[in-house]
Length: 173
Image (cartoon, rainbow, N blue to C red):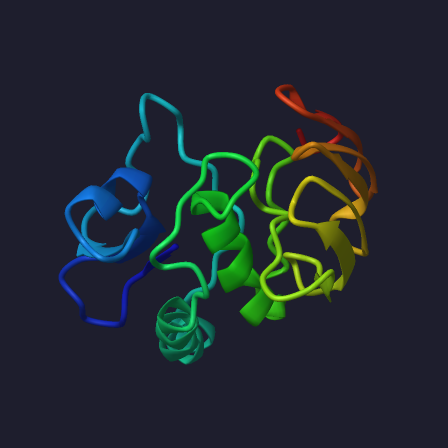
């Protein structure tokens, strides 16, 4: 998650980095850097973007959501909590982003404190058993089945099939 207030010199990037726990008491990293840096050679993917007054209103809420993240001192690559769990947590707090995390984002379905939550986009609902088995129904995500942390789904608009490893296949992919 990257934010840049008006007139700021740099972006503030909020992310979870598992190996950071070896040296700090938190996996949450907050630092100034470019917002679209590669991660282990992978291209960044823009999930949502807000500018101007909309962005200005979201920045304090992003900061509050980062502070309230329920797993700052935990990290598990599978099934979570991990960096995708963090991104899903933040986007659930801001449904106006309408962010649809990719089906390759293992950990996005790891829920805190229960079996039910809003979908990561905030536009529907999700049932999840610790990110290992679950279902998401949403106007943004479509219909997703989570099996062992892998996402299989159908997105009605733009039409696409969602598959683990592969990602989205169809329009807008």
